Amino acid sequence: MIHPSSVNAKNSKMDSPYMVFHELVRTTKVFIRDTTPVPPLALVLFGGALQVGDVDFPMPGADAVIVVDDWIKCQMSAPAQRLLLEVRAALDGILKRKIKRPEVPLTAAACKLLDAVVHLISEDVNT
Image 1 (cartoon, rainbow, N blue to C red):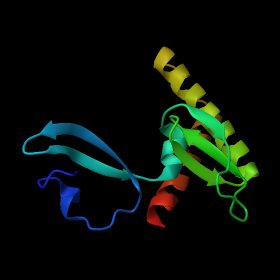
Image 2: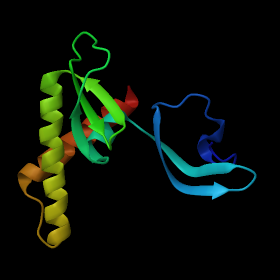
Image 3: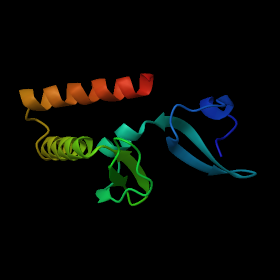
Image 4: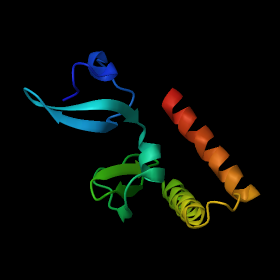
């Protein structure tokens, strides 16, 4: 449950079924505070471990699944699945290289990929 003092406490409808939080507190109940809705695309690109899953209830144009962290299922087309898995691998590589050698500037290709990801997630949030 979202803590009553949280900005999102009075939000009756969230933009996403998923949310991240900064703090878990116990007062009269267990609450979360400092919450932010997170679009499914951001979870696929920046969340936990990814697996290719099975489609439980096929929908037109959505014949593939990516499972994030063994529990969040995102259904999509097979071409979108392949592309997202490639983008996630590239993002993981960029992050690993930057952590290992923070003084080394990002390549032009890495910057273009990051710009594209920011644009995609921004569009996902705004729709």
